[in-house]
Length: 162
Image (tube, rainbow, N blue to C red; front, top):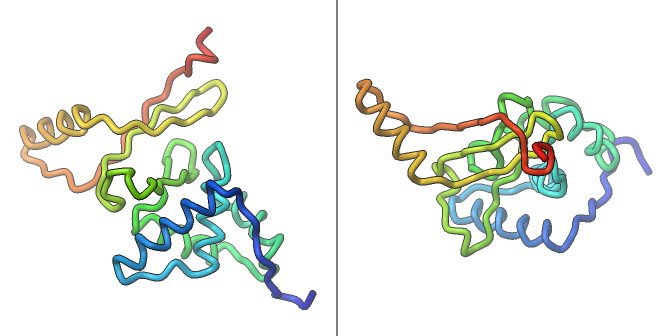
């Protein structure tokens, strides 16, 4: 294979379905899910745990020999902008957020709420509208308008607390 040549990545059927949904979301917005962005998103969606940028870069280099940090960061910025992934600040990692067609949330503005197990690293995204409203109400009382919020709560999952 020539230097810089690319080969296709294969993903599970479930991941491919989510990637097709992400492609449709981008098309609805007049944006383009390029092959590189699709690969980065696929790598994130395929993982069960949050994934860091340099882990993504290492895996991406298996098919894109010329991949460099800016390559991955540009793709991540696009995916974040379009609400297809979330960044977990606590872990400096990314998780996918592509709901099925009937998934029901706005990909650019839904409240991101995460439960992070400090023992095993498991991350669960929850969608608690009461929590989002409580934050908005508290902010309003403080004279503040929240445009976007990510809540990260750390503790123990049921498997680790037993």
